[in-house]
Amino acid sequence: MSATVSSETVLPSNVPAALVRDFNIYGPPGIDDDFHRAWATLLEENDAHPLVWTPENGGHWLPTRTAIIEEILTDYSRFSSRSIIIPKAHSADHGLLPTTIDPPEHHFYRKTLNQSMAPASVNAMSDDIRSIVVSLIEGFADKGRCNFTKDFADILPIRIFLSMMALPEDDIPITKYWTDQLIRPDGSISFADALQNLKDYIAPFVDDRMGKQGTDLLSRMINTETNGRRLTRDEAIKLSIQVFIAGVDTVVNLLGFVFLFLARSESHRQQIARGDVAVADAVEEILRRFPLVTVAREVTADIEFHGVSLKAGDMIAAPTPLAGMDNSFNHDAATVSFDRQQRNSVTFGKGAHTCPGKNLARLELRIALEEWFKRIPDFHVEDESAIGFSSGIVGVVNELKLTW
Image 1: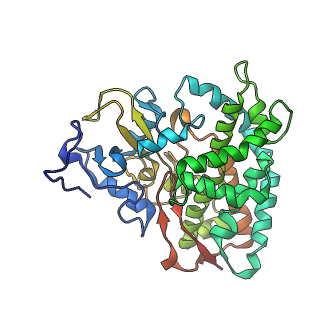
Image 2 (image 1 turned 90 degrees about the horizontal axis):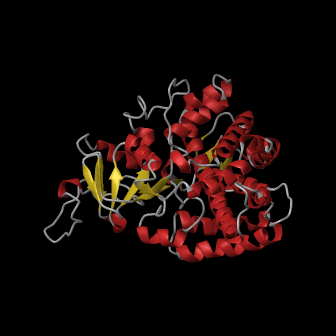
Image 3 (image 1 turned 90 degrees about the vertical axis):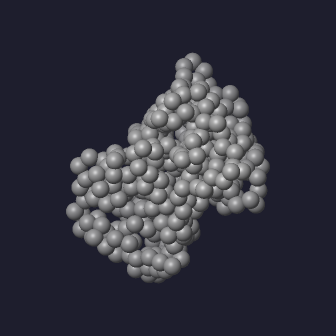
């Protein structure tokens, strides 16, 4: 993985040639075979190199241990969220709330979100979520096969989220397209245009519901009074877009990795089917093993960090997929053990920007597994040769077809 540094290569003055690695976070080596093992190639670095540097995507730092990722995510004084996308130029187009705001300003927006996504509010949606899950599964259970990605994973979280926000289900295809272009762009539309399209889409709903009482998530969020004030229109649009992106993308891809793992592991399927393990515990362990998100931070000042000189303005990635394979973070990390006694996880992030939708994501995954195993306790990957992966801000199983 080490990069050859030619005499013509001009490195930043603070980057030793010995720390240069040829690593593209949007196409890590070996991703065609296994997304997480591709990321785990960084773990091959010895302890003498806890941080390396790649010239890819504008040049940035990469940690090779999960403990350092935790530091990056929790220390906002040294690692700012004002730039969270690599390459850095894309962060200028982002500007959403609250992901690009550091504490203490961040607290207002996060408190507003927390009130809207509190466990009690999320749990109250259990029956509605279960109804959607059941209707989807029963649509293909008797067929003996399904395109899990298109028939279930791509639909379930978006339908749930649009229902929570009281937005039209007919808008699923176009809104998912715009969201995909922000998370893993294919070049068919610019990042800025995709973001603007989402803003133009959500703005009329914000305008219609601001200042009115409503029980839907959007109404509650934009009309919540926090610290003596409510969101402005611009703040409401930006916050709604960020919640929308998180709500329709992350769970889609978590579902893909969860069901791919179970389809390949008969022993783990049997433990769930026999009731040997609580589904909630199974969900937690699989989540620990398959984190997906790679965000970035901007270094705020010249500092020494784990033996490396970082300069103000440097970009540094925080790739959580490393954690699922890092034996220094969890014992025998790559092994999925439902009875694991101690479980360290960064799947939903760390620090001030820990995912506010983590309770909803866990609930969706738990209900999905409960209802799936009632109807389809034994299932397999229909075509292993077709399994491929993509890497972006969120990792993806490109397409998963199941048979039973």
